[in-house]
Image 1 (cartoon, helix red, strand yellow):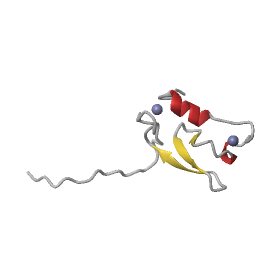
Image 2 (cartoon, rainbow, N blue to C red; image 1 turned 120 degrees about the horizontal axis):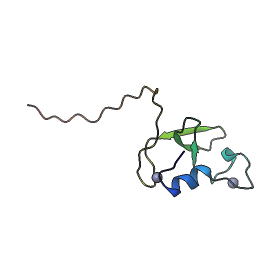
Image 3 (cartoon, rainbow, N blue to C red; image 1 turned 90 degrees about the vertical axis):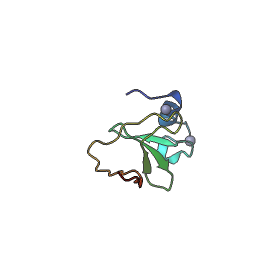
Length: 81
Ligand SMILES: [Zn+2]
Ligand SMILES: [Zn+2]
């Protein structure tokens, strides 16, 4: 696994001695799934995360679940013929 930038790698791999479980650590912001996708960690007591498609730091495209049926349609422009 390669990271697009050191910032993302540092955030995704950050651990601290106080919190063996990254989900308990408020300093941990990014999680990486076994599939290689990335998400923003939501510290609400659980392990929820918001998947991100682009690196917040350098803007590079991040891996996404190929089998995830996302249906992104851009805003339709009203141009006609
Ligand atoms: Zn911590
Ligand atoms: Zn990056």
